[in-house]
Image (tube, rainbow over the protein chains, first blue to last red):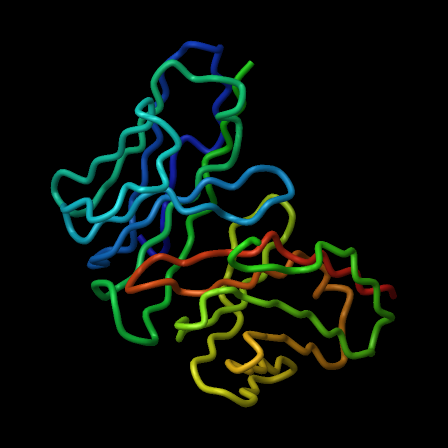
Length: 117
Length: 110
């Protein structure tokens, strides 16, 4: 597709439910990022993939959060046993090049809006 | 101290005026700086990137970088109501991690 595609766009989960959020990056993009954006805040880094390798998962808030990109294209962010504080927009972004160097622009998807009730 | 700081606003300017948005960062080793615009309910979109000290102009937008003062700014000339959005400053930390500020909400009054 032309841009980064995320699904579902909106998800309401009951506390304790598991959710899976999907990201389809721009075709051919090597780098893929997940960010969490709470209301009124800037995006917060969660994790980074270079192709299928998860090079950094330092931003994942707890072991309830898990991300994968098994074939180096589509990625899934899974949240187990959701809590109210997990309510946020989850943004996926991709960039053409591997990490490093100037000019490596990242492009964001529209986000998955998660509300935990 | 947050790694990237912005005034949350709102910053209100009349239509046709210059809007000035500011950002400071804490990592003196940072080399890459970005301004994103985010409309309510939408994803961030890149407006400008800047890597060298000085000014970089693109249409009505000018990014200014002062690494000695650890300061990045964005000027929007001839502001339009359609410029009303939240402007996010981002700094690339290390080789891939982008650190965002909380954003400044800009309101351009018709």
